[in-house]
Length: 424
Image (tube, rainbow, N blue to C red; front, side, top):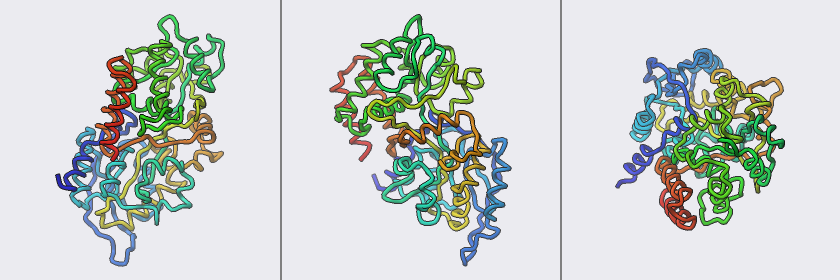
């Protein structure tokens, strides 16, 4: 297979985990333009084309107006296809073919991982994500996701933390405090497990369990890409023991994605779980989000208290003929004003930590998020360009292990083979 075809195949196989991890709204089409930048590089009165799924959000028009007024650059909006597979195919075809009709795209962690490694995106570290700008984002996340071969390929638009949630009504009934370490985590899980309630709840469907495997591997100080690492194996055995030895989490959750897991949490069936901060509106709509009911708590420290964060990203098509105007828009999006404007439009937390920490900024669950920013290392999820194949492959191996179909030793062997094949 040729290099170009291989890169196209890789990108087309990327998991649209947007539907799994992070979701957005769908916009409406507007007219596009073929106007090129002026010969002197001027961006005055330029129009660039942005592909995004945000444009039907109630605040989109106001957000777009702020961008245009701040930069002098007009935006034409092309809607991202609503079907994830169609989105992958559309974006990949545009980028791989050298099509310059789209200048900027809004993509998730999985797609930027694929597109940056395929060479489809323009580096941004010289004029947009400069050191003075980057220092205001999560340093580790920038290294883990938008950075490849020393270049930075995106402006993250918001921040989602995969946080630790506790049911305080169950906690109070158990007469315990919020778990702060592994021992307390397990003690609370045992105390809460009775009468059809489980101390720990998860989403262990094969394409979702990726998040929890990674979270426990982080907590034990392991390495998701190295399943021969004793600390990685300790994390896997801990998850197995939660279901088998301690019986504090149900094997039935092998079929669960986030929706049923969240509903069980709302219904008081789980004492604690790991879930994105984006679930706040779900729990709030159920009348359950409060310090006395379902609440975000600091990540317990096993060996570490590292936490995953995720985002969507604005990226620049390498084939764009309007790079100067596009960079100007990206500079605004990366600025404190631009980040705050996106937050007001989307209801999500800004990706810039200085904006989150500004005393004038307010949001639901903000203090809990600030705790993570101050006290945990915020990491990007371990991804490869073939995300769907990677996530499902490792998830299926984990399911066989936790179902006693294979031993830990065999699971380690199979997973490492899969990782070595896909993460090369």
